[in-house]
Length: 228
Image (tube, rainbow, N blue to C red; front, side, top):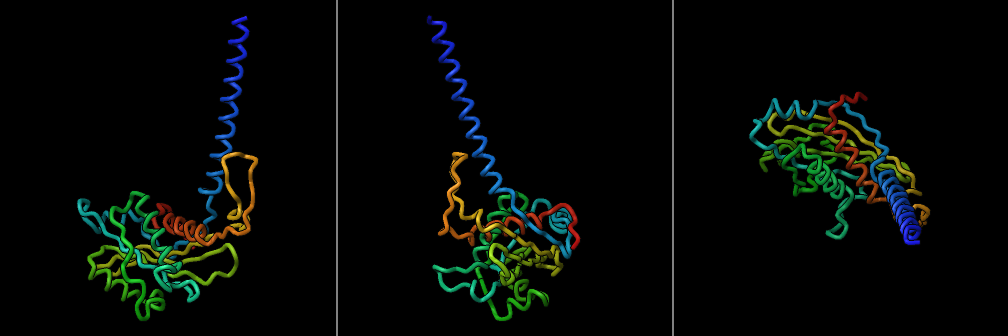
């Protein structure tokens, strides 16, 4: 009798563990599907492999400093106040976090100047203002960018350049586009696999910017040449 009870208890425990493992696996799958399967479209118009360039230009014992300048953006997405810092500033901070998290750049800082006369136009004509300000602040490299006017819901495109401050050489110049399904951002994601409630009030703007920053980071630090 005691033997039969022990067998039953063991079976119940095994079934419980199987159910927990199944639910956990579904939760991990859903989280990875939403978080890491970012549909990036990356192009590199001009590219040096980052580590190769840095090792040739800078001493190995001298950590490089990179400044991320808040991106130039369309007027309706620009800085308005401390409560509305603008998409360009938000994108810069997301890039700052992703570049640091990569572990490949020891010092990354968001530049403390968001705008100056001619900033947006100079992206295509030399970036002399950004280079000058970065040189005065003691940076080795400066990352500048331009966010294009969104053409459709769920899509953002940004162009960016990584420039060596001392020489003015463009280390990397490329473009990243993120295209997402609006419905994915409205889903209420929970740990149980059958729950997939939609939230019409949930906006995807912040997530789009976060994903675009990740795309740009992968683009800048890519070890593979990505011709246009």
